[in-house]
Image (tube, rainbow, N blue to C red; front, side, top):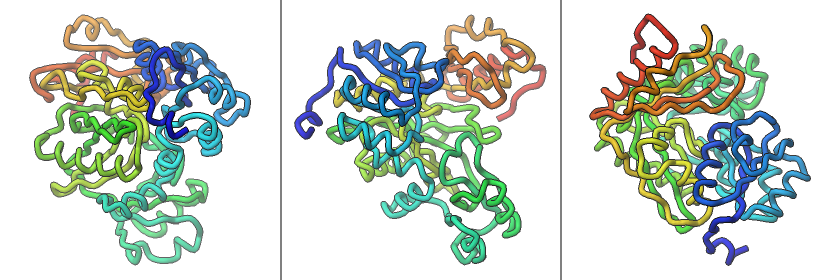
Length: 391
């Protein structure tokens, strides 16, 4: 296995991916464009990635037969989400390459491990406490370095605002923990945010990092709504945020694409959480970067030289298209498709539901604010909304 680690994986080798969502779909498309074959393991037969893969294994992520098939046919296996079963990753790693390594994914799967890892590596994080039992609720939160208001988040499986509650006192904390199923949770002090930013980077087998520009994010209901590139105060924020993200990747000995979500608090950067995969806030790279985050993922896990991460426009904005846009019928995309500066992406999901990510829209313009204005207007046009959006 050691010699194989140093050998680049070249087309027409077969790559494997656990997960069949839109992140997997774009990974498959990037890999196939480069001449690779791709096998997707995903239990949903209608998954977006399965529709474009060379082979779609419709089975559970820990299905022994499916894992054996991946191990036998794939030169490397990666993931498009952070919650595949640890046993599946370990089984694959015993027989083929898995990138990022299962140990790195395990840290990002569990907020307790993630917070402790970051703090231990000297990466700035906000005040937090772990609640795993009734006994953990008996000590006042302030004695553990956290003050109210605070946010209770399940240690595992929460995303897009799910699995979390805002609490204002010990009684609400206790109630929230019970409402969340009395599972292990992390309690994070709610910080006064200047803004939210994120960094997406790729790190290769040789330790080389390619860092995309730092972006600014706006969330609505816990779900990413708008990303603008570059972030405001980009010169200052980008270098500090990029340095932090690279430090995280190096501490994890990471191989692949990693997203680091950060808060700017009083002008200082604090890491919120990690995503061991391409990220929603990096979708703009499909249309406005020299190399997309998905091509970088292919390059990184295959041990190939990384592409250039520079933006190809001076201002870029991306808006998410959630199932809510379909509430009054199918959106009218005519305006978005008529604008030469806009790129519409729909993920091929058959059933629009509130909060479900159905696609995104990217716009390039001379400035980030101009791009955001146009992107938001095009989204309003598609759904026929009369009221303006404010950000």
